[in-house]
Length: 130
Image (cartoon, rainbow, N blue to C red; front, side, top):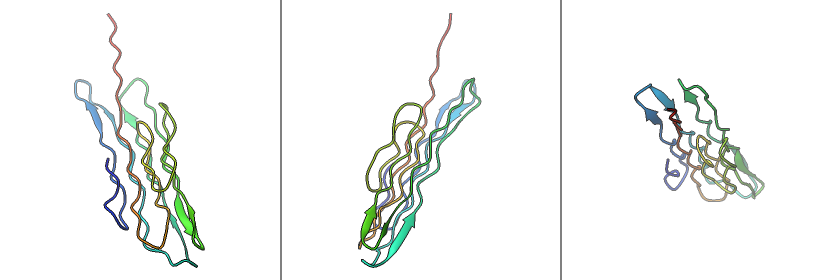
């Protein structure tokens, strides 16, 4: 998925990967929430996006959700992207989900509106045996 449109907008959800021969699906992580402009003495909490999950496979794993971001009295709390079985999440303000199935990070609030981080796409791995 792409990051949120500039301003107080959520990041987009990562794409769903499908292997139609057996109806296997791996959903992408959900984008983190955006943040409205926060006064210097204000505070906000912006939720990270939910994790993606696999279905109908022999092994179905799930990423982790993105972490919240926000601000307290002008101090920015960066929202990290969620991680997965395949690696850690991205760090920083409004971070995208890290690796497959991770949720996007919540926006770190500032005096201007900030978009949430994007969720990462799902993945299907097929092993062929003969």
